[in-house]
Length: 186
Image (tube, rainbow, N blue to C red; front, side, top):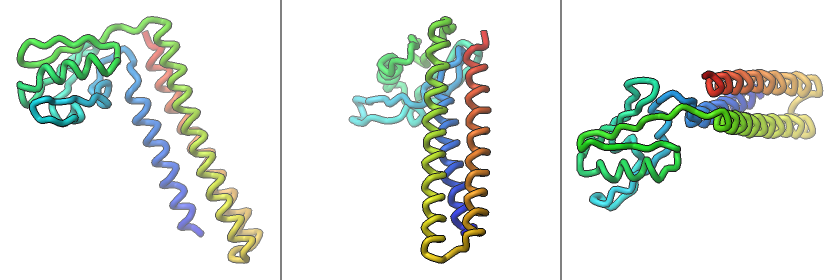
């Protein structure tokens, strides 16, 4: 049954990693390469759509600017068009060699909207963790019903499942609080 507890830990860790990835996509007023991670670029000359990070180097030389340097200069216009159409609120400009993407300061309304988004992401992951808890509780209750484990073992395992859930919820709250503070930081 300890294998199930280990599997639960892995499932919870995957959920927490998903939260981290979602939170990285939220713009905090500071330029980070993760802002454009989800951008897909349709490259006409290749006849394919590719993730931006497979076509260019994205750097943040300072807190208010991203630079995107395509490896193939013929994709410059495609990359610029993809950043504009990604609806990130960014306005890139290219100089023929690289694309400069100034990151505008956030308004108070936009900050509140982003905080709501952080809360939604966090709640979605909390729900996911509760589903994981229910799944493993059902497995252990089924094992007890089948006579595979004793009632005492069931209570011990359910307590361990709850302990893992509580730890995960605390980590979710900590990540959410840190991102909210980062978004509200002026």
